[in-house]
Image (cartoon, rainbow, N blue to C red):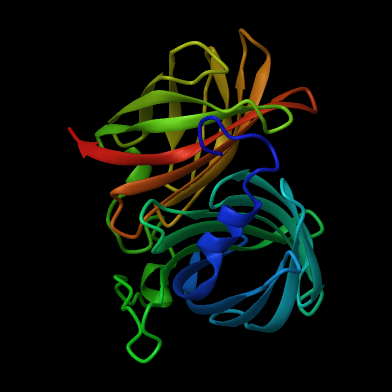
Length: 309
């Protein structure tokens, strides 16, 4: 949501940012977090003028395959995915950002998913956690380009990676975990209340220091908790906090996608944090959902830029 917006006011703008043809280079990881290969993801989104819906044609080819179409019905502050390929429900957090829980009957798989249109409206980032029941099957880290001229598709800036050569490499051949580089992430994040309304924006800074086996983060600008710092141990595939005021763990995929749960002990708040960087590691999309127990008290989202130390 943009500052000054109200819940349910973003229907037209949010849909319009996603309409068009998109081609993506999706990186696919298995249930153990190992890189399985790239997926070529093509989506064509067409608005049904006056009907408050869009139709989506999907073709995904990679470690798994999926193709077909589905309809999304706009409810203002939410979307309904009405099949046949994709069924589910999404919440609109901001203009160009949705978080969704979906089911793909052709594969028998469920996904927890977010899709964010970056400033400029020509690039999308997405992170899909795909499971059957509670068993992780795939994680898909996607980056998409809007196609202005379908006769000359916009190329994607990814380097082909042989899955066999990097299967035991947590960075998927990159040589570094994007979230563990020394430097800082800066930008403005939008904070919403538990009903995903009352948007407020704050400057955010996250300073990262790393010694290889552990990462120290100092964070300023998180509205739900005071400025804080914490240490997490890491093996490149995951992170976990040994002790302290912030505890919890997170999974990492290919050095550029991260999802996990952290508990802030002083406030008793829990945050489900989801992050993905662009392929070049310069931009990071953030979607954090805050809870007290099982009650959602708010959400935070936005785009950060990396500044090396």
